[in-house]
Image (cartoon, rainbow, N blue to C red; front, side, top):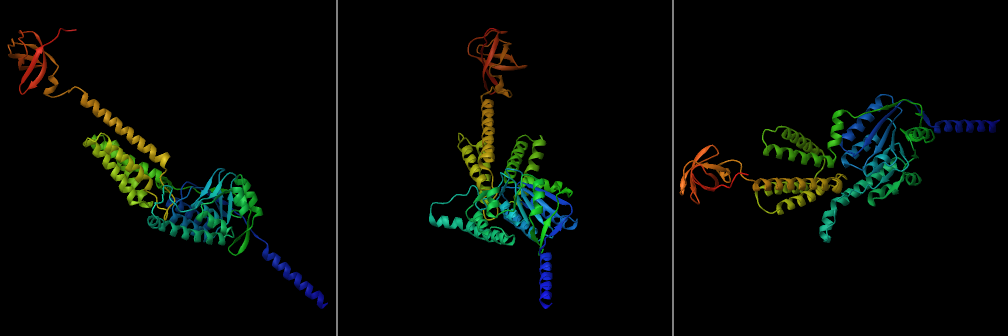
Length: 443
């Protein structure tokens, strides 16, 4: 009997442990947010507000559909902190097919309670190096230049390792994504333990969630949201506008549009529309530059390029100053947002900078062509316009007399004797006297 009692006690204890180990099922509606673009203060604020809303409105989980090339380190840190401390499970789904969780997106994907990717998507390349960054040839210069990048690399490596440890994901691969810029496909990420699920569609993802319990607030949880209502959370208008203008490519385009509009207004006062549009574009560009970390060297080079363009109008350099301005603008634009310690965003060289500079070169060429045509055109106002005009000799010219040209009587000196009522042609203006010659027959 005593042995039977021990067996019953052990069975009861095992039943209690099994009950404790069984995952808890969470049900309710599913909130959905979408980030398609850079990680910046606008998208960070959008996601943080979505997490806070999901915590209070009874959502079973928050689904983030992600497609990003990267973004600002500070904004990424704010998002990660919000996700790790969220009181609602977060699901990160790199979608649609062909999407990219690059750089900052790698951190965010790993930080989700559930990490999923669509087939054909990729993740990785989180090394904090600017696109346009280059290495000097001298060892000392290289050491000085790379010091900031090394600090950023070490800090971000430790950051992503701690996130991977927290979410029980592949710490070694996460570190390589930062140090070596490794990137993998969805299937390879699943094989390496970087993500939990590969799902072709959102419905497929929600179905697979039933088979993937995860740790949440000290207990194992499984999500049952296959038939739950799905509630998209949209960006408000102001956040949407801010999310667009803080893209470095858009910021540079706004800067150039603003300067061009003001240039047209200053040259053609009273047109109003170019000036207003230019002022608005310049204001939006300045707002973006207050948010984006930029390099003063790049900004000064752009300013120098613009100054050279203006100088070309007043100084005859046969295009040398204009060409130097284009070079300054290209170099400055590629360096303007090259801050690997704060951001992995940069201005696209070929898709953005080169077309802008090409457009400016064409605009400059049109200005030069128009000015050349104006200089070569016969003068249309003032005394000098009389040259080449025909008139009538009102008195005989031998050699001085009076002629009637353009509704006025002029004292004229002829190259040869001319009779009264003969047609004459003005050849020069000397003070208050015309020089004329006998005009040819009418044709």
